[in-house]
Image (cartoon, rainbow, N blue to C red; front, side):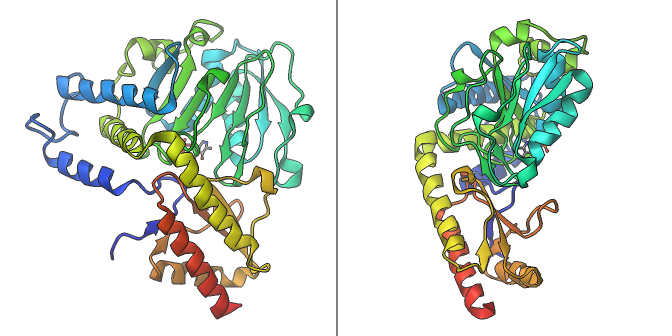
Length: 361
Ligand code: PMP
């Protein structure tokens, strides 16, 4: 089967030029005399990969010098568990703004290391909207306020993340990093698992204001200590070199394509096309998220009759469209349309949706 348009939420579609480069380097990497997966992380070839990847990520996201960039194994979930150990004192309050499944996960992961509190939540409404800033109940003396920039399952995204007052804002950008320009200086820290917009699964990145690495924190093993990880240049132990290298290729591809300003334009166009197809279907398809809170990256939608779900998925696959099954938490469908999804892919999906409706409506 030829490569389909892949709407998977993560691991997700990667740009074809990245895959082709990786294919070549898998056998022989430059003049290393070995595959990129066979060389030492401390050798000159990989150290250059690491240096270039950080430099390119700094350029792509306009990361200020007073922010450190740390690459970690263990995914976004591990970062969620380590946030309180690194940035909160034992028992210190930490505020969570819950806008979907991943905000809840972040809080659950942190709860044993701090006094995790719900500052605001849209759960009562099924996570179909965002809690307005005026409804946030922030704790005095909170170590940080945690938000999820884009909820990958519920398809809810902050178009502008509100300020959190005195406490540093820590944001999970796993499913929307690099999808549009971002003012890093508004945040204490930003983190993201790579497997949506940054590359393959197996590596995550934490972008953190350097002074936060020096304050608070709790006793922790060096491998869980972000200050120690930074001192070791993210190589306190053997890092996931292949994933790091792939992340570097993906970041370079985004720069070559025009950077985050260009992706903001493309992503807005793609999302508008897909939501228009859903909203214009006369109820055959529906998205339940409040319009102003709709994600540009993950578009969950339901067919008017769930009995058609299996036919939708199998006919979509025949039409060269894969990865559309919704998350088990919500059911239905979900189209994830990250940076690597071309507009032609979203056009093909909306064309298919109209044809399917004609055949089954
Ligand atoms: N946060 C968000 C927004 C996510 O989408 C995900 C994974 N889909 C996670 C956290 C967890 O990431 P990981 O599986 O890399 O730990």
